[in-house]
Image (cartoon, rainbow, N blue to C red; front, side, top):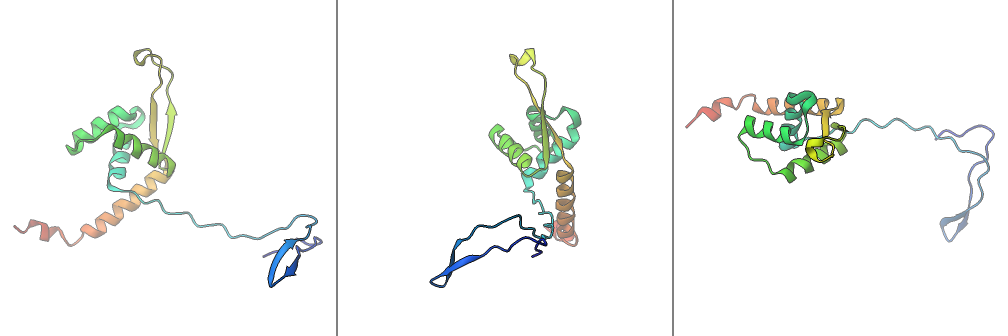
Length: 146
């Protein structure tokens, strides 16, 4: 810990072996802290699929076309609730950014939420892809066996 020059240290009265009742601290205390390394973002398989669909759609990525893209590319049925949950989770992880459109007459004056993949999301996709490719290397021949 680094202490700022000229400032008194914090002290406490000792009672029964424990430090309790800190006395008043005059001035500020400075601490030298190391920056925390970035926390890696791990993606589940469905999260990867959602991010890839958004990348494919570009500027037109809102929930309905994302769902249609996933269904058409993977043949996999996607529940709306599962998609919205994944979109919220990815935004909370910092993998997506969203913006609201202007109100649309065709939607009764409601807006659409458009999604774009963030730099964090791109990095997470790259990491996930590299990990999967490393696992796939050397097992292709085993999959060809009857």
